[in-house]
Length: 350
Image (cartoon, rainbow, N blue to C red; front, side, top):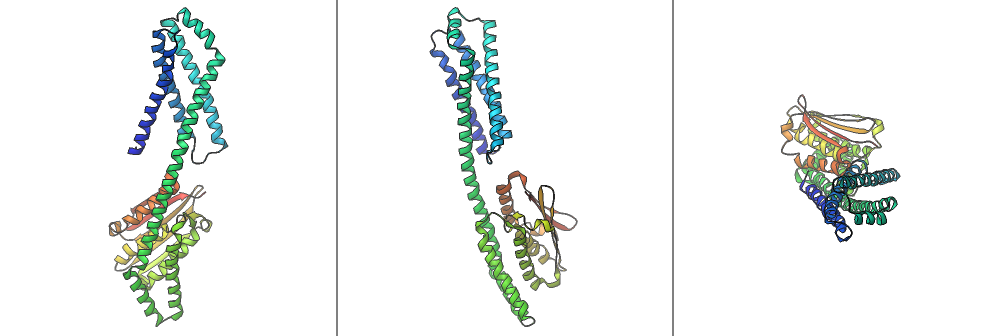
């Protein structure tokens, strides 16, 4: 639990204790009640209220999705509220019965309860109190949720811009531009049409990096086009040292993914993997679908230690965006398996 969650949890318990203690202290202003009953009622009433509403809160946290409120969630809240009212009333009745067994009420107390505490009155007052608690709790949760979503959207935009900037830096830095343009210039002596095609691919990559910094998701097919462009440019320099293989599930092409996550992985595989191998190697890209998930796998020949110092920012960016977009439903891993670096992204396909 991080510091922010610890603070929120502590604040909840403080408000619980203060709020219910203040409500229970109302018993002290009723002159017909004895001091013994007032003290007993104060402590037992506070304890019962905290116990019941804490259990109620636990149920809401476990079963209610406050980010996608719908009729199903409303039904769950309604029935859990009824259960909470029943539990509160039964426990409070039990504590009152226990008091009667130990101390017994005075005649004045019995008369006051007979006149002011009927079954219907107790049930209605209990329902009103717990309804107020529910409204306050849900209101706070929704306000916190709205602020959290705003912060996450800002963080998401920040990480997306960072990814776009890192991709752009990788493509317009002097070394990359010099190599790409110099390779294209040399290619012009052999194949003018292919040279023009490579210039087009380079311009498309730059445009892609600039234009995708404002969207959260794009079609997989669009991302693959940019990956193909990058590979085509990289192969001008690496030639036969770079072998690119892909196995794409046709059903995955229309699925939405965060922009530039595959491109970042492929660039890292080429720059920090294949480029460092004298004999070159293979970059393999695979997509597959399960019932609930899209699985993206990028493999490259080499050792994980080769890219350890160079890919941390890119990998951190990918992890942050997956967390912000999908929460715990997304997974990202990077491992070395049999002289290959294997990166796997797993995101919901629905």
